[in-house]
Amino acid sequence: MEYVNFGKNGLKISRFGMGCMRFLRNKNQEGKEIIDEDLAIKLVRKAIDSGINYLDTAYVYEGSEELLGKALQDGYREKVTLATKMPVWEATTYEDYEKLFNKQLERLQTDYIDVYLLHGLNQLNYDRVRKLDGTRFLDEMYAKGKIRYKGFSIHGEIDVFKKVIDYYNWDMCLIQLNFLDHKHQVGVEGLKYAASKGLSVAIMEPLKGGLLSTRVPKEAEAIWNEYPVKRNPAEWAFKWLCNMPEVSVVLSGINTFEQLEENIRIFSETQPGSMTKEEMDLIERVREVYRSKVKIGCTGCGYCMPCPADVDIPDIFKIYNDLCLFDDLNSAKMMYSLIAKEAHKDATNCLECGNCMNHCPQGIDIINKLKEVHSTLE
Image 1 (cartoon, one colour):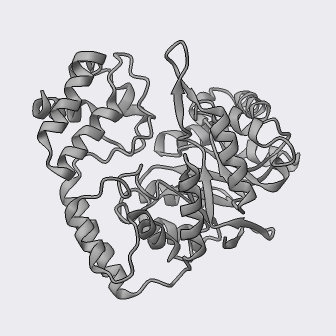
Image 2: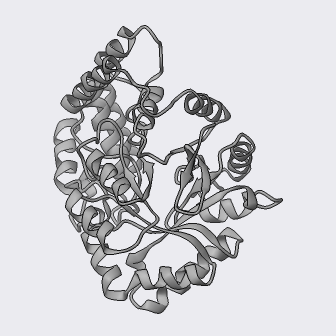
């Protein structure tokens, strides 16, 4: 495992970090989906024992902070750099910051956070932070030794990102980046801008919610297979990110021990500046395949849920994107029919309230996209 400098105090972190938003979930007796606690704890500890020392979670990742609080007992807390995020939209007064922060400490069963991020600083949340002087709260917690590094995450455009960067003396930032999104949201331009300002940069959505690694379109698979060195699609995606020295840590969720072992192998073999022009050209050709096919930029993060009308937005968009990628209309119609007839969660239930669109980090026009999906698959 490769380790890199993080922040300004000589901290070393693993280039591969464990994202803790998408732990495997099972339905309990009441039908509610909850984290498979036994499996998740074993995976977290196995990852740490294998050299992964950066863990990322958030207040709004349901059950995740509580799970990590349990997993990091028995001496594991001292072995990791723990990152979590403040839901700034939940704070209506300055005092709310400390209430939310203390709840996170309780969930995580710790008395300090290594990396504390203000979550989702789009223009609206950035304005909220400035109004309530949220960065002063970071300074206070830092002075008390309750946080070690101050950061923010963002799903926004480059102009907002640069304003946020220049607003405060941050230690790090967390951005969405993958070879499909190289010019989307913050993009590679933002990565380099942050690094030029001395910030460490963590990467989320390296596989775009699994879109770049599972059920690869046959056109993209054919391009990957042209290269004499055989790599799976996830390896290509990770290699593209790690090729850039400005990337400090790449976050990805792990739900099986096989995934863990494979990711450790990939990151142990990947170095900055190691990709050839031929490999970069290959990436560009695959990028064009995806760009021509994918119609909805949904990563399946679930921020749009729960829907007050119980519309299963992420699954509906996944079905539609699979149709666009693999041209299997019969399978798409069958899957959509199951949502419509059995679960009653199809697009016709949409109330057009707009709650989902207010929370979508990708800025998707969800209401109209649901209508588009329904007109295709009804």
